[in-house]
Image (tube, rainbow, N blue to C red; front, top):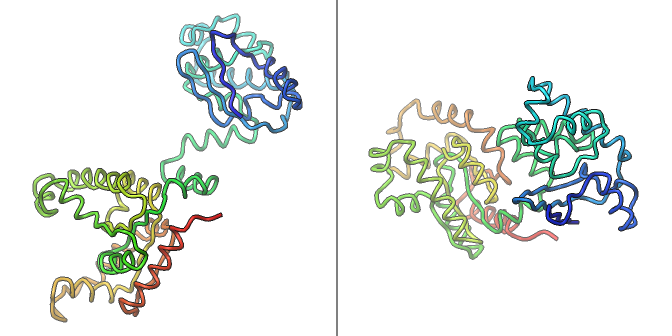
Length: 336
């Protein structure tokens, strides 16, 4: 349910929300903003979306809780009421009443107080079980936040990914060979992110790295990834193995694409890389396998965040391509 409130039409207070409850035939305080799921301010217009669930306390308890949190936050910042009043534009008398649980604070004023304290409104009004969760989410890094969203709202994430699938893994995993073959079997385009980066820069990757360095390459990589996602609703994309080490770009990949981690034994990786370079057996660096294991160890936890995983060790191109096509089709097929 969404309720649009405009300052020009009268500012709605917490106690007045109880009257709205009655109008909808709901229990008292069921529409208290402790249950709001979004709170958007645009000038003097507030748009609030909330769940109509049973409240855990009456209006008096709610006001006392809000007042207590305002007082704790103010003291935690070592602010006097006078300073908070100057920052928020709310009178000291009004703030005193609020902190004592006696002020029937309006939504607009509560927003101004929260902003002055460097908080979101949810942190002042959320029911007890939610308040610490909100605080933890605010302090979490982007990786942790993404995992929380994946657990809480998998349907929304699936919609954001559409029917786009990205293949990740170390060099020699088969991302290009198997990706092209499986995309053909499924009947969707196959794209190499490397090709998109080179087209965007109008030069090969080796020259990009020579001229702009790793940082310049990573910027182009992020732009190319967003461009592929914007351009394609259905696509199989092969990306460089090191993309997982760029946090923001990897988060974009996980958010906008289903991902499949292609794995193989170190020996198979070395053999495939050697074949790509047209090297004879024995021409590779004897330390190559050890280096490959070290790289995998440093990236394994990141690769493990993929939507799916496909082992290709000892499998023919035909076998792995068929298995990958089935995995891609499964991820692309909408769930009921």
